[in-house]
Length: 593
Image (cartoon, rainbow, N blue to C red; front, side):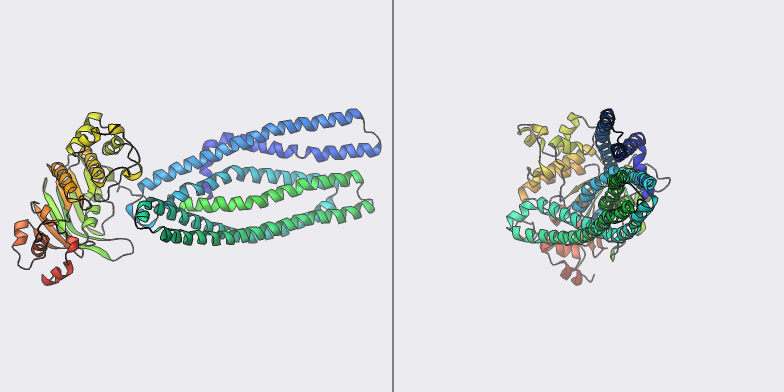
């Protein structure tokens, strides 16, 4: 893991060297004061002290302190810039990496938790990146220099004081392990809070509509209290660590007081040496205290980097060696005995086989959870199939690059996602290099252009987070315009109109009918009256194809599921009864499936 961490230092090696050099000089300047103090006290006692000596010594110390002033600014400013640059690079790497992760990763990881790793965790890492080398190098050099200087004054007194250091190391090592696990648990708690916040804020309109503020508050408090308990463990370990280590450093002063007093009494050292020893012991203790304080930062940074590495180690989507580009797409789709199951779950699809010829429309009907949407997700390889094969124009999708495969597939879903930005930005998402004329043409085909023209800012109108300023029909037509602009050979309509009112659905359906022209289309239908003109209809039940054929063929099957579904769905005056309103299980049993 250290190797992964240190690679982020490489672009900043020069500035890091300057930063560490400046820190080293700062540490060495700190040694000047006790040395000059000893010399002046000795001169005073010996009667050789002069005004010139006092002035010279004072000017030397003042000059060095001015130099240290600028060096400290350099270390603080450029050191933090290095940490920030490393943080930005890690965040960029993480963002690029999560763009490559499969759908299964997002099924198992909440958005808020991922955001926590990209913000607070990386901030702690940047602090460690800056202060880590500085604290270790400066403290080590200061400690060694102070030890050598104290040893030159009196080696025995120095060794007596030094005996406390191993005790300090033992205490630090013991509590470091406890701090590590505690701080990692605290980070998990913080991520849960972020996840809860992200979910609650995104769904605030639903919360208000159902007056469930108390419910959301209670849910938030569960994570909040868990975070507090994690913090208690972390701060308990940290408190014991600091209290124990500080007590040991306090013992240094007691030892100096006792041992130093006896040594003066015995004539082993004189008053100037003892005074210099008292001043210099601060230099001896200070780096130890710095390293003790650094342990908390180290645990924060390391636990944050471990969580960063966890995501970076997640296996991204990759093309197989020798994968080829999908070009000149006609749009023929073949499923050959496809089996599929999600991670750690029972099988979802069982032996699915069908063929959709170029330009044909296949409608998938059946109950929720039967596997229709899963079939749609497998075509662009959002999930890898367990066994069998899926082919586009006779080519296995396993052998195609995912970029070229998905470039030729357009998807319109029930749950439309629009990005925060303008209407134009969201339509352009279909093809980023499209011209303004092409954007307008796509909007016209989606029956949204005239409405856009009524807006004060037209295509430059901001739509808000996830298109909150738009109606469901407006959002859906923008998503359709986006697909028109993409102009794919294969089209997937996954219950694209199921959340709309009847009037809006008619407008959207007209746009979808236009979109389907000349494209191979797979439609997941929620109203059977809208799919009777499909070239082929497949009834999906419990992950299998229960029935398959044209509308007229399926209507001829006695006790057939589709026939019963269709009659029930069109029996009401408005002919708008949806599949979700039908007892599908009873029909399946009646059909002997």
